[in-house]
Image (cartoon, rainbow, N blue to C red; front, side, top):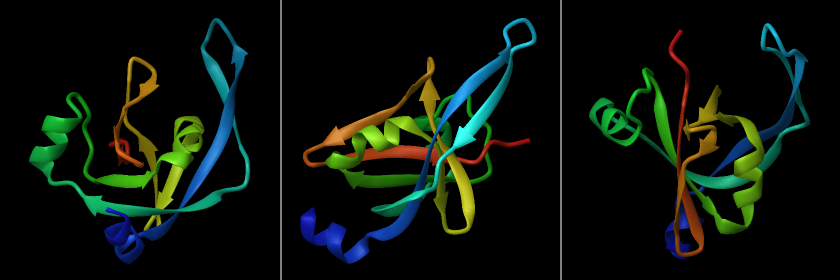
Length: 116
């Protein structure tokens, strides 16, 4: 896997940020992002059937799977946006928690663009 990661990895930018609740009654929030942090990742496109199977309930036109090194786990968990190939993606969350799988020294996660 290490050899494949060195050959196929591309640079992606992870934006870390925080949410501040402005009005608790109307649920208005303000998002603050810091400068992006570039890391290496293997990025692959997901087909529509894989999206329906892997991320139930998500309606999206564009989705990707990323594989990153395990040392970047905390950065992935704190991410608000992920910039890949000219588009901004968000991580797939279930019950407010980011869903990912650990595979040896690597982490596999699904990211997508929200359908408006």
